[in-house]
Image (cartoon, rainbow, N blue to C red; front, side, top):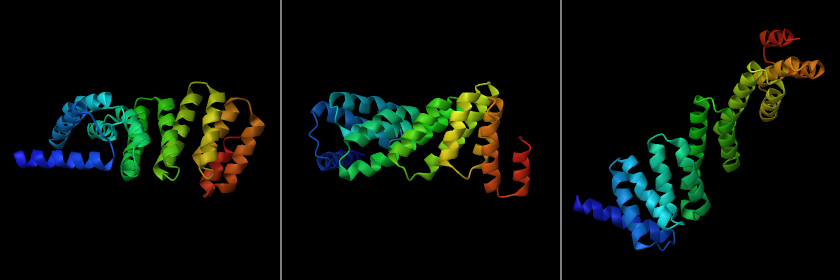
Length: 222
């Protein structure tokens, strides 16, 4: 057990040295205590230690990374986002990729968590940030498209047709081949009294619809 703790401390010293950070003894102590708990799977108990280390040393990258990782390990995605944003901003080249991957996971996880609560706006904001972090992320893009469509549908049901048009229009822009986005946009236009725009939208969708059944459903909207 003593050997294991010594190894953990030495590993922390290597990380700190590689990152080129000279931390205060109090920050290192708090971080080391957090690492011991983290390695034991006691993530909730580790969190206050990492928070303390980051408070003492505001540029302590590893403290922010492990604070974020602790939150991720207990599925508190939204809470993981702020420290991982900071870690990504502070990270030197050798830890940038780790912070990048963790932040992306936190943003997508946070978006899905907010979506389950019906917080469409928060979910969309997190997914847009995820795409800013990684424009090549198909997962972030696909989740954003789905969320925009779901939000648009919710807005139609609430009678907010102009706002629904905004959401569906963005979905169409992101996914020009998504029939559901076109269908939602057409419905929003119709409910808002924009029949000419609805017809144009339906005609565009009909031209790209892969099956006759889908083309028939689109025509039925008119």
